[in-house]
Length: 385
Image (cartoon, rainbow, N blue to C red):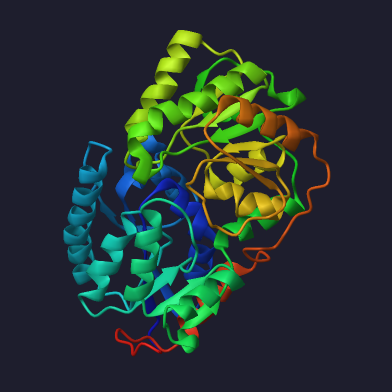
């Protein structure tokens, strides 16, 4: 039997960790052939060169799609998406995949969905049915309605996709592939590398071995004018706490220029001696860093997903993860220095956090490959009412 050609489009740094174990399972499945397309900010050095880690992990890249327009504002996001539709349409025409996978909810992922759907290519959507803030909410649900097969990450998400009228026979709770990586770390949690020695970064050579926190804060696309002011509240809180901190650069989103300017300005004027800045890390290294931290601060979905599984304390700031199912590890605050400080201090002292399997048990990649190999692939559907 001819293997099914499964085209997976990775458009950004976080998307790779969201799908890495699934890529491995697809690649190793005798009835599947992996066609990996890397696009968007995953190709850009300023956002951490995710493509370098992907190639280092042994994945062969079928196509690279440069589609990011400068500007980091809503207009640039819309134009980037349009350019993505044009470029990805050509890629799919050339590769002739059996099915295309679009990942989660980043704004560029709707380009993958449109390009595949309009060419009658079965579309598989990972991680639909969840609820959050900003433009991701619209993109995720639009992807769901364009998709033919739904590989959701939780029971709650599956119920929501079914309420949207999707065929129950095409909705599968496979869990989130990123939990597969987290399970590897949970089974072997020791921090076996020096983050600064391995990744360089910028800032003081902090004394992290006595305890540290991690910060990852992105702009909220629907609140992008306040991105700089928002990140400054977090910067002031972290500086005042004076706890050794590893701070990661934001994603490419509307407002990320404001977040970046806020970080650069604070770094130059305040010269914080307790903060070291990174662009990116290999997914497993990043999760190992989180597992051994005292707390994650910011608004990344990794705090909601992987940190719940790993039992890592999280201070979630603002509305970016609003409505997403979270565990007992998360404390929510607004963009206020004093609230952030108090929440971090409370989370660090809390020793009763219990790991939770909200987004899977660590076998998602294999489940996804099985669904892709065995499920009937169609590019049309009848909505169930």
